[in-house]
Amino acid sequence: MESALIVVDIQNDFCPGGVLAVPDGDAIIPAANSLLAAYPISVLTQDWHPLNHCSFASAKSLPPFSLDTSVEPPSVLWPDHCVAGTKGADFHPALQSWKARFIIRKGTRKELDSYSAFFENDGVTPTGLSGLLSSLGIQRVVVCGLATDYCVKATALDARRIGFKVVIAEDAIKGIDANPGDIDKAKAQMRDAGCVFVATRELLANI
Image (cartoon, rainbow, N blue to C red):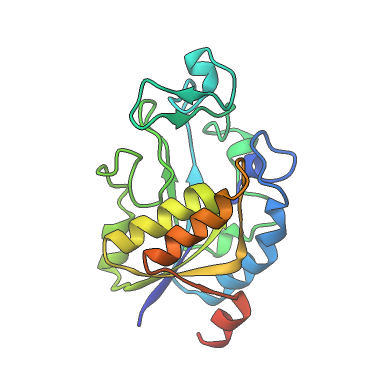
């Protein structure tokens, strides 16, 4: 079965020292690099936001981590992060990004956020990734990256929704757990949707 690797949002702003850092987010980079070296078809996703993006608390004159109640369901408003062209939006320097075949930038529209690599947060506007992978004959995606309870989860669930088999590299993801239990809930949702969790070493042994 033809497989592709999706490496989600391993960017400076999501790693220690970044404005929206996932705890120990950079710890998964060696595993991600091993996967990038092994999969000939690989995709990096990159948050790439314009100034005053709708997900920024500053754009709504609210404190970071407030809820935006103007949308349904209400969504979290974040500190300004991954602004297009800034160092924070760059891939982490330890990530061997040159080994990837494709880059999908998401959250590029000012009034529409995007967690998933496949669809914007409206659930219908495609990023183009599904068509790209389908044109290459991909039937299964292996997902790793940041953060387990947000963009990794959204990417995995959308991949299942549109018919891909999904494997999560369980030691190559990290979550935020802003509310204790969020990571476990995200993993349960992914398992319930049919995603399979596998250690990186097992994935590499079976390529």
